[in-house]
Length: 261
Ligand code: CAA
Image (cartoon, rainbow, N blue to C red):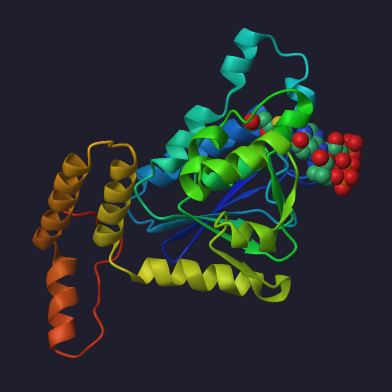
């Protein structure tokens, strides 16, 4: 892995961290290119069941303003982080953003591309792009309204003000807020729980939820859900999960296998 992104895999959980502390983990083009490479590696590795993105001290302070300041319109289009953040959003396994310190602009958009967000009480979140004369351009106007609703998303984007982790928890921007002392443990517990669940069922649930958000026709969305649901009856995990219930024992789900394999 390159010099600004570190990938560690422990017990089927991938931990991806940004390592550009002097710039509060600002996202330069190089950082995002390295992130993209790491995502390719994770997606091609069938044995990873959960992805956690966490960076020490600060999650990420947004796109690198020094690199963007003099971009032309055509250069800005190439600089855009959307292809990489979409790749993250589309990775088929559950993803978690573990937010400490600042998660601003593109940094918050990186977290929005994850399925779940857990924040330390000291986290500060926001989309300050408007104060720089631009708007969020890496999924902020797309994912934020779907996560917290249109009115709150417009408020955060129009005002560009930072909010605390507690406020983020209250509006559903983060799933949970924990004290800095127990943050690391809480992140690992959450990742461990996800990793112990049925991988095939989690992937089907993610596919179904994400598919339904893009499907305006409710009946078609229900049809897709039915297909995702019924396909699970061809998996080892469904038989194991249901027989374990009947036999009053804990299920032992298949580790790291995709459905059908
Ligand atoms: N880009 C480039 N450098 C950044 C940066 C960023 N986004 N965020 C922080 N830095 C750098 C600072 O320039 C500074 O570097 P020097 O020591 O070389 O001067 C260093 O990190 C520390 O920053 P501060 O001195 O400003 O530290 P602070 O504690 O006073 O404030 C902060 C921290 C609140 C994060 C502040 O740095 C800040 O507001 N950063 C910018 C946040 C922002 O606007 N992000 C959105 C970017 S636009 C975007 O993301 C577009 C998009 O849609 C993808």
